[in-house]
Length: 365
Image 1: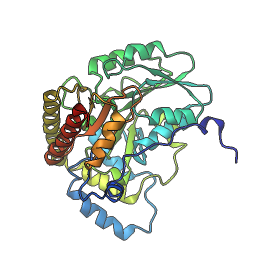
Image 2 (image 1 turned 60 degrees about the vertical axis):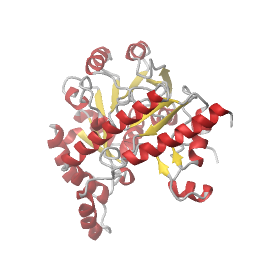
Image 3 (image 1 turned 90 degrees about the horizontal axis):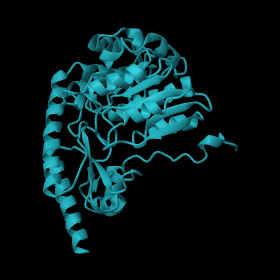
Image 4 (image 1 turned 90 degrees about the vertical axis):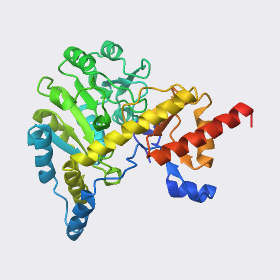
């Protein structure tokens, strides 16, 4: 078997450890997963009814154009229907973008610690990924501009950034977009946009009329709580969306996923409640980190990246034994873990476990 040479050494994406696997391996009765930025409050109560109705249609292919959801989202965002593309999570749209625009030898620019799927897909297509170091955990937009050249096809901006949780302000983003050459596609990944409460943050969709080379990614996996149903979407200019659609598989989102997303979109009160409770969780966790003298990046999504002052992989294993699953292994930040903001009970149990590990480490146990 002869694979594509450029995929031979690609790392395989490592998801957060499953709860049941940890329970089985460690003999634990309770495990709290705070590793994958899932919504601890579930999904809108309207979703169950929508899913149950779709079960009677389970033998039928989904609508390949997601017409009903498309209509609702177009009205919700104030865009035309042909500006929308749907994917099996926004991850798939990232893959489709690279498939549609990148050929071997092209360049793509991104932060050096951001969502790993950008680089993985660029590598698959044979692109050269230019990674620009973050500044204080945030995108260095000026540095990224300096790296744009004749071979640059795509620039990726994750806002809020995963894993650091920092944001690019409205003014900084507009200044950046004003100077990106028109032939370079800017992918603005706003997977966590609905969580942001900072007034300096911008809604990227509102910038689309001014910047024809911009595409904005959103998802129903995060604040809407539909991670298992895998449905995300992109919004861009019709000509850009058409090119991406040309490499999309015909039935890439399910009937159940579309129905659940449509039901979720109509429940603004659920989104508002999740945003409020997430903000409360951030306030609690950051207060506890400060009490423990642990520095952290400003958190604008539903997760926080914190410096635990010891190898993050060791902290991960120690917390795992106590039934807490977090995320570690961020190359540029070897002593940082990323923890999802959970419910108030989950947050308190995480802090108790964290303090226990830190105390043991300090005592040399």
